[in-house]
Image (tube, rainbow, N blue to C red; front, side, top):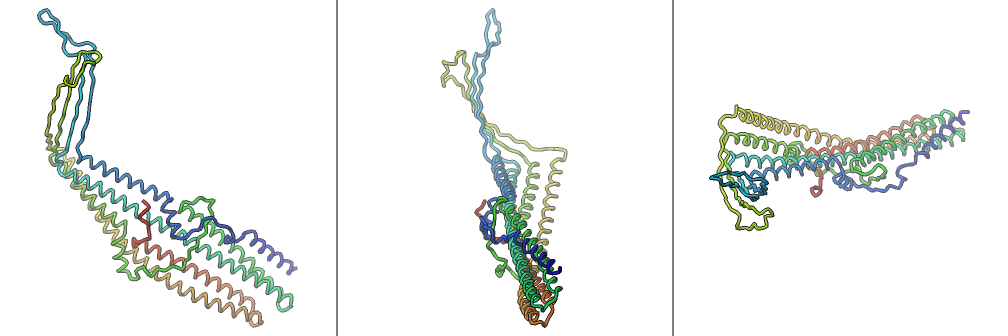
Length: 450
């Protein structure tokens, strides 16, 4: 009865393993390196694409600001048809005033000469706005690349976890088969066979769980890089990365971050733009001087069809005008605007200083996390080596009848845990290196994708 139950359990576990074939056996259509994944994300990520529209908006704002510097020229024309002209009676005679047709052509020019520094300040604000938009796009690009790095490493971690779980399942099956042979030889009890079958049954759901985790990680990576859900991907990278180019001491890392961080550049530009806004508000209290000129051609014709009109029939006139205006009292409206602009400037300076301090904290944390992960990777490699040797010893002792099956199972568990910890440490090291690159502002980002 016990043997029949054992066979049922093992048969179910093996059948479940066949029902969920290994993803490594599937024919994947898209082969992804880390660089290829980043390239696809920079091309297809919708969050980044929408951010780039802000750059177009900023460039248009600069063009609009230049309109305050350049002259404005307007052309106008009109044709007036007088269906009934006014009549006057003088000395018994009737006179009509005006002509049947009046034709006008006009050309007007206006040019700002001085606006209290508002024109220059407006241009500076527009340029700062454009630079801020470009810097924000750079930051968004770096964040997208970091997400792709993490998503790619998640897939590699899931694949490694699946490999560890599958190897543990295979060992459990092999152990069961060995115990079964010992049972048939009469050297072990029914309990040993039952215990081995339980290990097989317990190991199989972990394989399914790891396989599901891999499918979820690939789905998330496809979302990040803009691939359709139906696409099948295969990542060819490795969690064993080289981080020797990254700074190992905190002071060097902080200096590098302060020199390269996009968000800090954006904060500095915001402060400069708010300072220009103060000058713009103060300029409203100064004189406004502009030049305007007009040229007019007018013809009056009684011919209903205007067929007899010639160029010489037009009378010409032109004029120039200097316009000067100066605000005397606006109910203190502008002084309120100046105070608001100054408050915005001071607030941006506070934000800039706070960001500098936060960068120091972020860099410190990233450097320490990378160092910790590096130590865990080294310890994990040593632990796997020792656990493998321990399993070999336990296997020999069990087959020689020196140790129990529980000791062998314990050695298998220790090896599986050591491999899992090593893979996790390698993943933490890879993601910590990517995070450090991000907080330093040196994430490997292509600049030709705008």
